[in-house]
Image 1 (cartoon, rainbow, N blue to C red):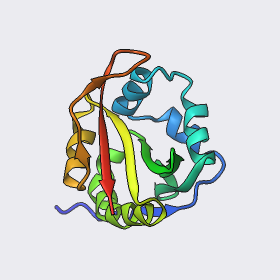
Image 2 (image 1 turned 45 degrees about the horizontal axis):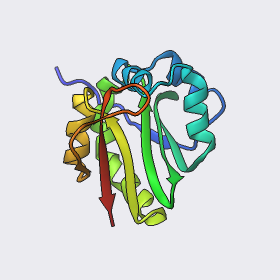
Image 3 (image 1 turned 30 degrees about the vertical axis):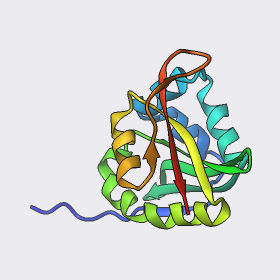
Image 4 (image 1 turned 135 degrees about the vertical axis):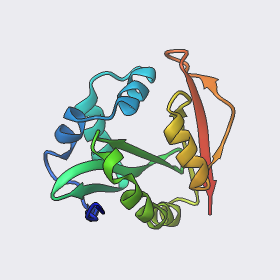
Length: 154
């Protein structure tokens, strides 16, 4: 039996999105925040929403799957994403839309740069498939956890 396709819709963030994402955060995203020395999750996600030049929430049936965007950082764009446990069930539908949003980020910022927790193997693989260049892991200055810088230029 074929599972029916569920549409992933992308919209502007709404009040309550940060709280929903924080309450249902994927383990890998939680581990990454903790590895970066951040443990008050909902305010971190809300700050990302509030301070991004571009930001979106992906939803299924109105439920937030993830929130993602790009913040200005030293004249460059810092892309980011925080997802829920439900993301795994809809990752293909979300990933199919990702190139268009990466394109919008590159229109706003000719250089994209950020860091990914090296232990987040799924994110590292996806970043490489999406065309980002990854550097060798280096220790985080505050925690010593290994992070990889990833970049993309238009």
